[in-house]
Image (cartoon, rainbow over all chains, first blue to last red; front, side, top):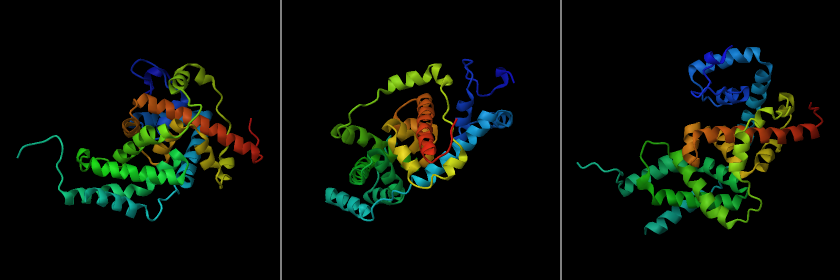
Length: 88
Length: 194
C-alpha cells in the first residue's frame, strides 16, 4: 500500500509508524477511514496484530486493577464541612 | 437581560452543581490523587483542597461542560503547584529532553519489549499497579487519564496544558516504559522473552 492512500499520513507527508497507528486505534482517536485502513493493515501485519492483543490486554488490566482506590467514607462529609465553615 | 461571560449562580445553584456534577467524581479524583502522590493521606488532602477550590471558583465553571475534566485539571495544578513544591522530589527528569529523544528517529529502532498476553493474564496481583506507580509522574499521569479514566486526547491536552502532539508522544513513551516494566515481571514469573 502506498503512503498516498494511508489516511494516517500527516499533511506534511510524515508517515505514521505501526505503533503510532495502533495507539490511535486503541484509544479510539481515529476517523472512520483510518479505522478501516488500520483493520485491513492489521490483517497483514503480524507485529501490529500481536501488539494490539498485548496493548489491549494492558489497557484492560489497568482499568480493572488500578481504579480501586475509593475515597475514604468520611471525605465527602469533610469537604462539605470545610465549605460550610468558609461560607459562614 | 444582559449577557455576561461568566454565569452568576445563586447559592442554591452552586450547591446543586457541587452535589450533582462535582461530588459524583470523588472516587476517580481520589484515585487520581493517590496515583500521583502514592500516599493515601496526601491524596485525601489533595482531593479536599481541589473540591474546596472548585467551590470557590465555581463561577468559572460552565454548567453542562465536562465537570470531570475541569476537576482533574484543578487537581493536577494543585499537585504541581502545592504538593510537588513541598515534596522533596530528587532526580526530576527533563521532559523536553525525553520528548525530543522520543521524537527523534532513534525511537523507531527501539526494541518493543516482548510481552505475551498469557503472561499478562497471570498478573493477578499488584504487578500492573506497581508497574504504573514506578513510572515517572508525567508518564504515569497520561496513562491514568487515558487508560484508567478514558479521557480523549483533546481533553488530556486541556487538563495538562500541553499540545495534542505531546499527549500522543508522551503516551506512546509511557506505554513503552510500562511494557518494559511488565516484561521484567513476566521474566521473573518464568515467562521467556526473546
